[in-house]
Image (cartoon, rainbow over all chains, first blue to last red; front, side, top):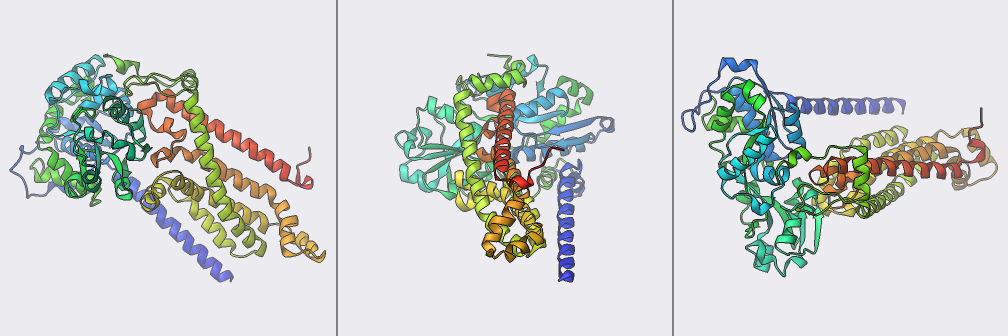
Length: 335
Length: 239
């Protein structure tokens, strides 16, 4: 009996030690600033795409901290920017899990991060109080407007990515066929039978449930708040459900026979290209390669590429750092 | 409509108290005001409701098990190791996992939170009963008490301080963690804390203050119950 207890205790102690080691290892790898980029320096790949990023020894004196919000697409973008800046010779740190845009922006203002990728539509609605229908559909126009607003706050922004991301009302193909849904307006008279799932903040936001109610005049059977990570789970789980999805979601490309998004015919969900938000102070310290590298590395980021990179991280569970490194190499930016 | 950025509300106690009583302007709601006493009351009731339900589940699962094992003085290591291992389960992962299994909503959250409450109740109840003076138990047996009577009239009363300590710990853990419920389809005071975008920093602070007050109130209520349940012989005498 005593022997058994001792053994059991030892086994438990070893298990705990193992769990602790794994936990520490996991923390270590996510904090490590350069884990992904070392893999990107192999020789193949190369000469297609926007040309290799040139490392400038002058930049090694500058340390940049790349931030991002806390969901997959943002984390991948953060990795891509971080590794590109590293390839340009900067010392790069990462802080890729910053929560909401207000948290991220506060960190930029406080100088704890150098910059982070933001959707131009989010910047205009969330930071500058624009109604969703006031957001220009043209990316350059929206960018100019946001940049001017940022400048009043002593911030600046770099030009937008080719891809745009927007929220969208999504559902299963089966539900869409059952009720004949193609656009959000088609929900009229049907929405009372359907439950809408969205992130907790969706309920109040004018570019989400509040807008669907106000601008489309829709009433849903129920709105249920869920974590962003569950937006497809809730569709899989039940019938007669709608869920707030992102147009860049890899699931939409990979499983187009299963999920559809409804066209936002009254423009409640403004589309947003990604702009890099930073401060003039950082721009001055970091020199011309800062903006050049950011703009150069995002040239190839169209909707297809972003969906595919997202699919590898979200569906195939590859680490974002590796996916970003392999993208940079395949597109000829590094290696 | 420009320059809103510089007016981003920074948290202050005054601002948080205002948020609790009066609906406030928000940047992202297209003019709808957020917060206010009606919403606070609604969410507080929700938070209490899920706390009580999951505490009931935790008690129903852990108490009989721990009372039995403690009375029999069996599986000490197992009861304690199981209790401790249970504390290591990440709540968010559990909620996400159960979302796929049973869907989101009150049931999901209540079960996930009960998992959080079981370990302290299990461990403390077991230890409380297990450590009761064997001489007292033998005396009770000698007086002709049945095993159930021994548990009810001797062991439980003597174990009340330890046992209630476990229940109080479980309650605090559950009520505080119930703030993540809005991520699984059930609105609690956590809604103010999770959605800084909507409620602003004052809303986040208000949520945190309300949850802390609620936890304190529950703790005081349980301390009162404990006083009533503790046998006079066990009460601390003034030194």
